Amino acid sequence: MKTNLIPQERTRSGGFAHPALLYRGSDAYLAGTVPFITQGLDRGEPVAVAVPGPNLALLEKALGDRAGEVRLLDMTLAGRNPGRIIPGVLRAFADAHPDRRARIIGEPIWHGRSATEYPACVQHEALINLAFAGRDATILCPYDVDRLSPDVLADAAATHPVLIDETGSLPSPGYDPAHTVEKWNLPLPEAPDGALTLAFDDATLTEPRLAASRYAVGAGLEPGRIPDVELAVNELATNTILHGGGSGTLRLWTEDGHFVCELRDRGHLTDPLVGRVPVVRATPGGRGMLLVNHLADLVRMHTTPAGTTLRVYFALTA
Image 1 (cartoon, rainbow, N blue to C red):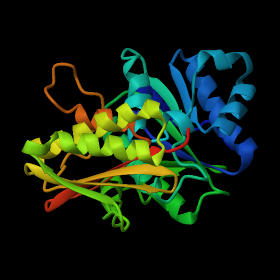
Image 2: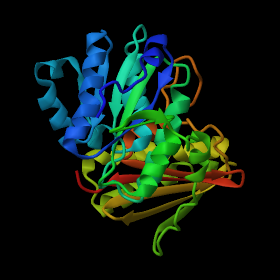
Image 3: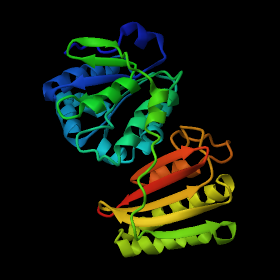
Image 4: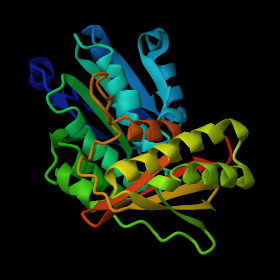
């Protein structure tokens, strides 16, 4: 594995770089990530690493004393909800160092991500390019070639302008993030039979929150997370009244160890970064979806001119 991962002229001249590291095994992983980290530290750049726990342990051991110079995060916790990664991990770190180039390793897709989570993961990777356009930062995203499917690797090529493997780096011939966002804007599976269904409008705006709270308690969601459900559903229902045609439908059920809340309305979310970037303090509105992404373990969305379906998941076990 070559250690000169990011073309030097690109790094030094500024701008955003977003390469994918296609690795096989732990030795290749370390060969592709440790020099990236130490090069940044040697240049005085702030460095963050957000990867799954086992890879985080590998890097921490390999870095030795220098690990203390790096912001280390377990992505299975910080990025369990892919919609939380850009505002809560990537932009949070880069924005904390506005006067220096940020260097970040982010691994949001790993073996074990569920099929339900995966579309949100791919859209996240595509949207990084929009969220960081013009920013002075490098985000390196590792992909485990041996454990991820060819379809996942094809999506990596579509969401990253540069691909790095054991032979070096090259431009991705399939790079097309805008198409990828739309490709994964898929209709969500229908709610199961027996899901609680509640229509609401402005006159009954409090009912979705109360219904979701009662259902979550009955489903066994831990008590400390009930306020999260109430806040998330209240924000989504309020958005429906303000931006979704004035009325909507709430559905509640449990699925694969999660309590699920779905809201449907006639609105159309045209900004793909809604809820995924920090909101400037002086900007009115725009905080509802950001809060929902912060509270939920997963957010899935399908939006068209005919209407929007938002589905939020809360894990029933810690």
